[in-house]
Image (cartoon, rainbow, N blue to C red):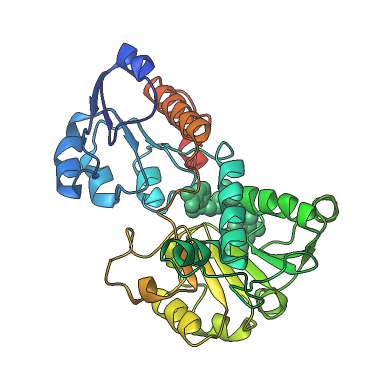
Length: 322
Ligand code: NAP
């Protein structure tokens, strides 16, 4: 059997090497789509990343493919319906990156509210002359309202951390959670519109789907308070970049801190990069040593199960088994 791994992983691949011939794409940049398309007819298993486009054409060319295993929880880069139609199970890595991504969300929230990145730039450029009563004033967290869009695994982990800051937490999602979950987390349900108009901080944690694509556009920013801060550690395409630029540039909202952009990487000539009130990190939500190792282990376990013809421990499309 042959396996293709589309990047060097922070883990030993000997478990895979015991059952198959393993080819690892050695470059820092992802392989080109055309290269993947050429390779896929020869392989039995594919271990991929969110930077690889796994579409219908590629899946149909993968006549030997027994499993696709993605090292990420999100899978918006994969045409799941096409994989299911071909009977190919798709694996992902939910849960193990929840806490690390919630931590990064809070790092961004605190950085934006207390203007840490601006403060660092100010200091390094020699502008720090004295203590000033009105220097780099930010927003308080205590008593503020945090609005969570999508109360899944990561949204809930973000909500748990808000307790330590004595914040009021409201959330929206397609389905309201059970009362016990709401009470345990200390969160209250709101419509998206209500959430946007009353939150001091809005943080996005939905998956990217056709429903959440550009969920945030001009209308949503108009509904937010001028003092509001937006955090996005979910997916870039949930927020329309031009609308975000307009909202930040005109002061419709106070600031934003984003770990994900559309496209990725953000183009160096993006007008967003000219804004002082925006923080951008390079999609590092799950980037802790332990978390990345666990993600790699989970992706390998999914792939090995697929190669053995067993059910993937974490499968996105369980319909393939029915
Ligand atoms: P999850 O447990 O599936 O949570 C997603 C939540 O979004 C669910 O609670 C879902 O609830 C809600 N949702 C779906 N559609 C919605 C809509 N139209 N409006 C409002 N809420 C909606 O997933 P997770 O593990 O928390 O991960 C969330 C996302 O974070 C992933 O899909 C991934 O894209 C992203 N992520 C990014 C990083 C990073 O490095 N920055 C790391 C990990 C994950 P309902 O179905 O009830 O609506």
